[in-house]
Length: 386
Image (cartoon, rainbow, N blue to C red; front, side, top):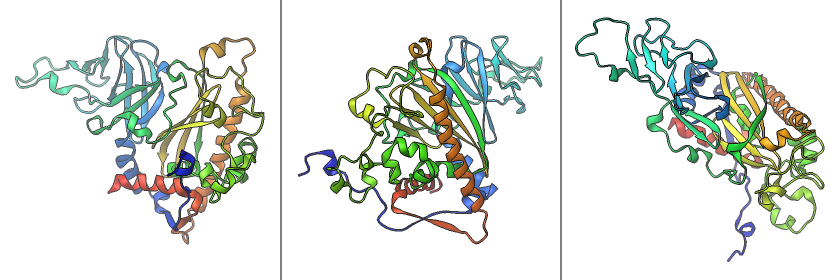
């Protein structure tokens, strides 16, 4: 009987050849629309930090595919979300991208139908509506919204939404990080000329790490082996007795966090376990829109947003404890620049991948053993089309 979890675990790699997705999955406009309808409109999607909406009547409009969502705080400060569409004849309700509502009503700019901040219709433009007209039948179309530890998620089909917590699968929930209390210090956005699935495929393997991420691979020795996890190594059992960091999880000797020199720019979070500290990076993923990484002194969140069949927006945010940001000499930018470099490198590789897929000779690729997480992503994707 195995005595430890290490002995129970098996080799992660694929044991038989698996095909990648067909090239059309990354190029075809019709299939992109299906991705939106089946995947993006039917899963929880990360929008941003809750404190980006400050106080009652604050709002923002969030674009997801062809859909516009109006997100606001009502007069009690509670988060609400609706399709940005009037129930009269479908006009857009709010034209600005963000701000603070001037009054306690959402008023359609076309025919002046007015809704309260909970989405209930209060006033119509007609002076003599029909006897069978009932305002309660014409509330704004609801969108699911949830604040998860300070991170705001929406769901376009709230009636069929699974609990948000389930969308994180088996990944860490980062329970030892004070996520709700963190302060957003920096946001960076970039547009990649690639399909959104290519970015996720890149995220799910480290075969590219030594070549694409030389600085990161020096920081994380396991990445030099093209492994994401210890159990990606076919000979992991044999190598566990070795003290060589190339076969171990965590950061290189002397490094404690993801930064240019491996040093922190803030005090480590006080409640982390020894394993979490030694890992140096602890991931929490929620497909299709985001992954959150807990480092010992900060948290980083990356959001993926599809814009077109061959265009994707990537947003990265860096969060620190409020106490850290108030300390004299606090300088997060070397740390932020290191994270930006990793995303830029991933972006270049993803765009390179996208350009190559346009070859009329290429119909589908093949996955190597280390790309087991890419295969799992493909299976998750395919489950939305069964």
